[in-house]
Image (tube, rainbow, N blue to C red; front, side, top):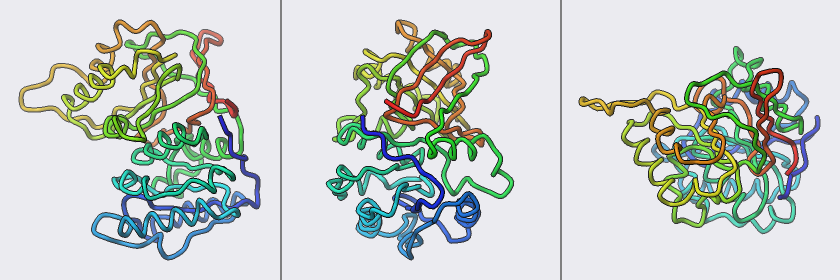
Length: 304
């Protein structure tokens, strides 16, 4: 696994919008914060392009992202928000220069397309973490914001997990892969399909009907995505919906049902996903789970 260079003060962070559109006002707190931490911030007018809900046409978004991939001054591409649209541009991108000069790509939700595609085809680590749309002046000291800084600087990311009655805790070690459950489901059968063999699989999701969660997790299992994993980490499953006739189980219970026959740890309450407490994880790097002082810890390491 290729680990891009970690950042030091004076390095340049580029802001990109591969999916939904964003305004200059919405990125201002994150831009000011990065500058206060000693980083340079780069973007151009294409960041604020608009085409309906997208940040410009597919070609505009792809061309701008390509320019950042090919810019050697840029050490980190921080995607400003998710929404929908990254899958529409991933096949337009040329990663030849990126392969020779790797850099960090960071984001979550729709940015799962990049995590999965880059890990599978370029054997390069990425960062699953909060995005500028989530950064406000009130949240600069949050676990999400501070763990983002720790992740890009190369520090270990050590999190103590709260107990969850459905967890089957046990020690594990392996390469982390995954991201947003809906995106993993949508990528199946495509060139960006996630490879889970001998990996620690992580997923989270937001704003889904419970039967959708059932359908997606069932599909992952039937497709063999659970067959050879080292562990399953379940992040926030937030703001779920039900039908008039209740599904009868929570999202976590649905996941747990499909994990009953797995012979690996299954860990719920991983603090990552669509909530304020969205802590950074390194996809493509080693992650460990272990007991310490009667507490369960996960450590997203800075190496493979």
